[in-house]
Image (cartoon, rainbow, N blue to C red):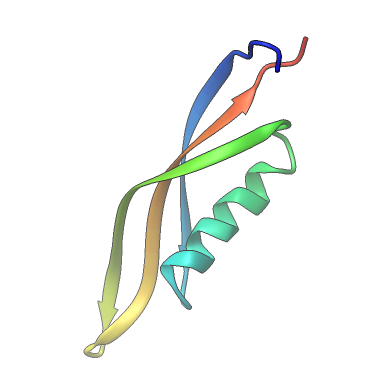
Length: 69
């Protein structure tokens, strides 16, 4: 295995369905412009309450990706 260098970015995804869907939303959007993503870490989860129910999930993640050679 060769040595790697990773860069980290922080993203917040939203979803009306679930925390997992909020993470998937953030990763899918980042994949359009960020290449070589390798891992993510959930940093924070929160949401909104609307009419006594969860209205929106917001999940902040840190994504690590390798730099191009």
